[in-house]
Length: 169
Length: 403
Image 1: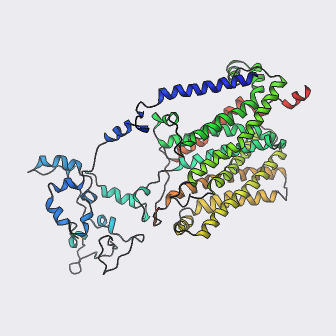
Image 2 (image 1 turned 45 degrees about the vertical axis):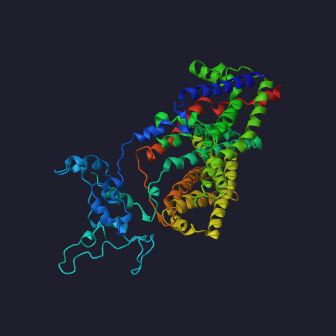
Image 3 (image 1 turned 180 degrees about the vertical axis):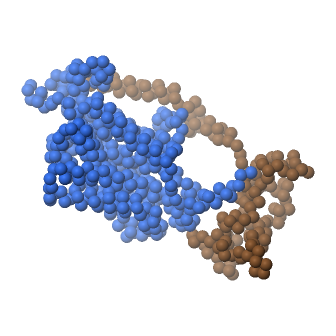
């Protein structure tokens, strides 16, 4: 066999051997325990801090609002969509039964026009609604800069929630 | 508690119309644009080198070695945009040691390894082995050691051994051409096979990627050859340069026609995604697609290179035009990749809206990072040209004929 072929074959053999050794050394220990992935990755993700509590946990203390909301347009809207992630609130609010909650545990109470506009601003890409349709699957759309901007008589600037109670709009 | 609605306002200001929540942020940014771009440069440069070898176009000899070394320099960096995009430098190697065959993405490891180890390195090795043995005897110190190690401590440079090198090198090149097609066809396949994305999903995608890759690779070698001759103060072989320009013209023409065909096909089919794509092309992609890719990167080079097929101006003018044209083509092909990768993520798969993309300067997805992966291959190429200068190779044919 010519010299260069011998050398090439040995070089390739060394590279392949090196790869196999490196693979044994470098492969994560939990790889392949249950399929082609690093099994411990699931544990690592579990360790991440939770933020959301889920609306079931809100009902325990705020049942009145749940009942109020349950037959309105916002019945399907979960509490944390507007009020923000609430896990810390749910976990620690009990300890402040008769005192005021510290700011870090208070949830959002969005009441500005722009807050409602996140969902209710006119969006050409959404299905349009006509005045006589009543369909809960459709989100009502308004122009937040025009829709009853001020009170007709007093000329005072109006917020959406002054006419539409968010829990039963 | 943080005001999450505030964040929501900010995020939604990027959006026009309706998009699904996971479409607001572009997950594939400039580094994923670079990946097909760099791989394409490799495939293109290699194809240019094989023209000389397989089709015996000896006029192209001055660029043969340069094209191979260019392909190798870019090949060594081709995976880096992907690895740095993943953003986990401490366990980036894990992707290399856990190969598998069931994902189209993971197949890149095999395609890449085949092309690097079996094609590119072997061809360069067979081509340079004799010279490395000679150079090892002529030099001292670290350079001598490098030559010895790179030639795998072989010493046999008898005419018989050299003839064998030549023969095996030829076989590797013959295997190499379909492999280069496979390498870049594969990259096109990755995009073309995503059926949920109407901007990507076309069977022509691998072919279009391949031809634009050949175009960009040839343009790159042409640019490097002109610049290198200037730096080395050597006379440019105009016959070689003219022939490269002619091939560049032909392949650019095929590329242009194929891309045009793809668009005509889309327009004629006018599927339900047509409207959203139409607005995308004339809106967010207007400058990158019509001006940078179409006009500057394709039409202008086609006109200038096409004119040169009939009228041959003075050498000086041709050189300058080739320099500018190759740079324009390189920019054009970069923006072709941009339009595919970024464009495909700018519209919602609901066909009802768009998101927007703004590239940052710093950070792992910024353009400084991208610039690093464009500059590193040139540093590698400078080193390779220092170590294995193609212009210092001894003429093998003369030796063989003597015997």
